[in-house]
Image (cartoon, rainbow, N blue to C red; front, side, top):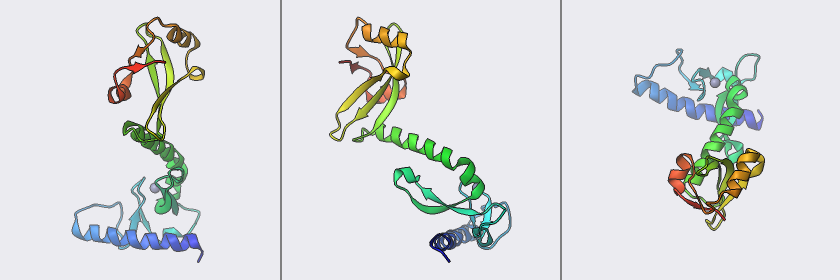
Length: 179
Ligand SMILES: [Zn+2]
């Protein structure tokens, strides 16, 4: 038995014990009858110990939780179909969510891409970030902004204060100094 198979088996044993307990103590309903099994956390289908073996059919795979890109460990079981279909998508969405969450908490080294708009309605894309000392920096992204709007924004007579759109604006501050 290789390392991956051993690990999968260990996780299966742990989770199936938990699930057995849940079945006995609650009225939870499952898609099929089983004694020892685990649920794929994405599709909630029931998988048995025999599904640990790689086969032509859907089987259990080792997945990182949280995503590997966030330093997660391969410590949960998801079915192959879900792993293929939504694994990457889930990772990206989760990563974006966590980065936003860090930003909202003003975590050092966090950043968030947002839009700024001036009184004339010129909209630009900007990256707001905090460095490791908590200092906030605002970088206007001309590459990701409409060139006309970008010029209008820069040329705006009212240099100094721009409201930020959206919830980040409410959380960060309603006004920003533009330098
Ligand atoms: Zn699944």
